[in-house]
Image (cartoon, rainbow, N blue to C red; front, side, top):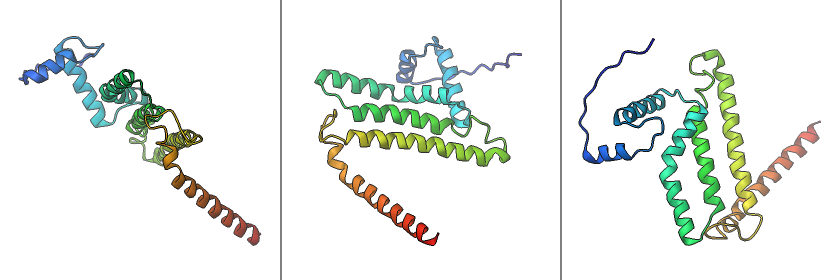
Length: 182
């Protein structure tokens, strides 16, 4: 059965009406349809009822103007940055996961399932973080990389390498102590 509808009249600023008219929403053509979709999206966001795909759509929409402007400027200037391109895509996907990670499996409704859901959420975050780290470290393999500033990654990699050396040394030390105890 269809949900009962309530008529609401609202006055909005001319600039908001213009925005609403120019808002590209394939599933909504009239102002009323667009307002209904916006309310539905706001409700989903506030109530945390997003799955990964709706979260991804939402985040892509939120970043669309910036992405479009970046691609346009890159085209105009002949510049390109793999770092900016990758992180732009990665951050949208990460945010979509953060928006939906604990709601998709019903962890909010079942306290017994919460520990499993939290661990799975953490694993998902770790996987995405490791992808980011791996990709950026690969960009540091050469002294120059396809970025606006070709040395933007390589010029900042030494402190990371020092950290990696420290982690390796600490792990080796723990391994030696463990072997001695055996």
